[in-house]
Image (tube, rainbow, N blue to C red; front, top):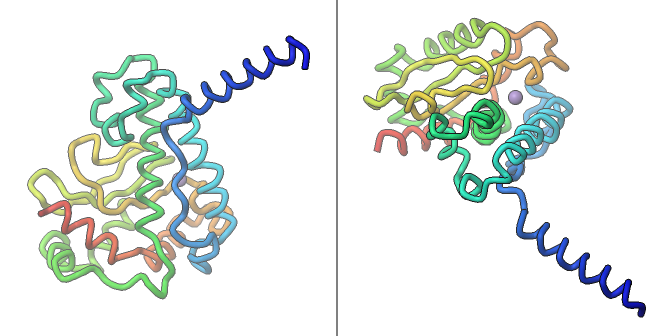
Length: 228
Ligand code: MN
């Protein structure tokens, strides 16, 4: 073995060690079901592109924004979003948009499930929906109206506010009620990438469909955690 080769091997070892040390802080979570699990309401191709391309891009861009900063890389995405105002100005918008995208989609996948398992809001969430909106049906009407009312790209949200009340919110881009200190239980993604392949311009049809695949057990559990 020549001296040069040994040096090259040494350099390769150093590069591998550096790469391992610099493993990106954020990774794409696995979908908790198959791409086609939400058919016929949400089609497999939309799910695959939405998760593997769109969500992956939010993760990659968040890693680009904070990956070079050892201290920020140790924080969770929720912690980053909670301290947006203290972040370097140069990365603040990227963390808000890309970190918001990562956090919102990570929640979104968990709030969906096959229609056969969708179920109903639990006793305590059902009671809160009654108090705040006059029942599940009226809540779903209001959620659809809020979702239809988002101009351009954004989300409609069901959060618990600081007084532990259920409220309805909507927000542009990848903002969420957590930026205002509320705890989001459920968000409806109304970016066109969430529905355009199957529903084109028919956002109302997408909204009716997605309400068939809400994981009410998960949302109810999240409610109980939020008001505990
Ligand atoms: Mn999306």
